[in-house]
Image (cartoon, rainbow over the protein chains, first blue to last red):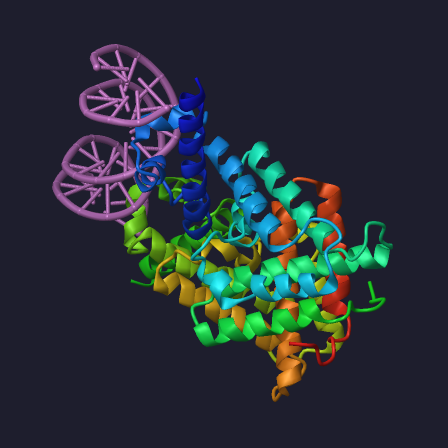
Length: 193
Length: 193
DNA sequence: GTCTATATAATGATAGAC
DNA sequence: GTCTATCATTATATAGAC
């Protein structure tokens, strides 16, 4: 069964990469199973040999995109400050916003999560926590460092999401630039709250 | 025709308030025209006497929500620093995230904009620019002030969007708290970029 | 202006041949 | 495991009575 298993695995990954890109760029509801399968070079009927439902595919695709993309761009542990800064700049770039390769589901799908089922949302949340951890400077952090990490990640996700939403591309560039500056700056000190 | 005109206007506003809430909370695709009209106390057939399409309603509802909500909470001009800070704290509150009243379409619908038609996107963009202007301290601003205003608004929109997406309510509260601190803090100085 | 009824099209999911 | 064919549901939008 070696060949058969390998074939199934290939099909599954083809579906996942295709779905990850389509969902991120167009959103969950705008993309049909038919559309995913055709883009993956198969027909609708083959879908349910790999996934139990569309929502199941959604969760798996988010995880797949996060794993492949993030692992490639930034080591999970012991990454350097330079690596983190390069990652932030790349994340808040116009290329990432265009979404050609495999966009980050955190930014591209934020406001699509609120009404998804628990499986999808918990996957998204796990990916979010992973990014916060990855961008934190050290393993053990102070509350201030944790707060600064959250602010940075929100500015990254929010910046890309807003830039994508805007109709005015000049303003979108300005937003990206401002967020790069904000996310790369030294964490804001004790703030009023 | 005074009574007739007034009646039509009432129906239109009832549809708009209902739609603004439903779209924000559940997203454009998840809400049907039938659902909006039933919640507004009418049937599907009456819809097209007021709006030309579902996308048309979407754009109008976003504008309506922004106008009514923002005008009530924060004066467009000559607002004080205290008013702005209260607005930011209310925006990044758990109550706003729950979305009971009339949630802000900027945060609740960010990543839903990218694939909408130009009318909807340009309405959203106008509302965004309005909020940036409103939160800017003065009429004439330096580039640094403009950058700080953009960072603040991104942190507000991103913070609410992320908090809503998260499955873990404790982490969501932590995100909101961090963003309140970040958005209320003095603008970060000249940052590397 | 609002109603009921309907045309038309798409979707998610299943059944059965190969 | 992938295909074609189909079911059941739901949606936008329109037509015509009142």
